[in-house]
Structures are given as C-alpha cells and as structure tokens.
Image (cartoon, rainbow, N blue to C red):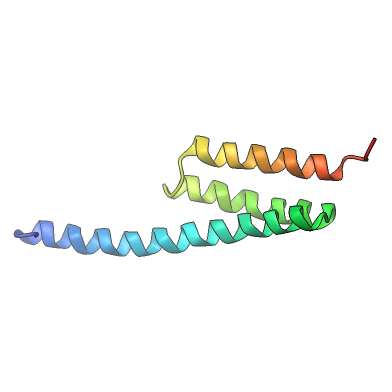
Length: 91
C-alpha cells in the first residue's frame, strides 16, 4: 500500500488513467467489431466504411499509449486485406 503522499497521489493517478484507457480500449474494440460484423455479413460497402471509421480510432489508441504501434498496424493490415478480398470480384 502507498505510504508517502507522492505514492498515494501516483496511485490515484494510475487509477484514473486505468479508467480512461479502459474506455478507450473498449471504444477501439467496438469499431473493430463493426468491421468484423460487416465482413461476416458480406457487405463490402459497409465493411469499407466501417474500416475507414476504425482506422483513426486505432491510430489514436497508439498516440494515447493504449496500443503498441505494431499491434495497430497489424490489425489494420489484416482487416484491410480482408475488406479488399471481399470487394474483389469473384473469379
């Protein structure tokens, strides 16, 4: 348990940051879930618009320190390739 005034304050700040980060991570997951739902439904237009909305949220998560840069890039790359494959004409 925190004993000094400084450590008590840091504990309070850590709790506050945890709440903010949890909300931000949840928001990012919601945007990603919308892309996944559009992909599973087979709607290429909805998937493309959902992906366009999810991309800035992912990058914002990186700048805020919620996600690692490579994690966000990997997620974007995989989703983009899936959306492109859905939009491509069937041969």
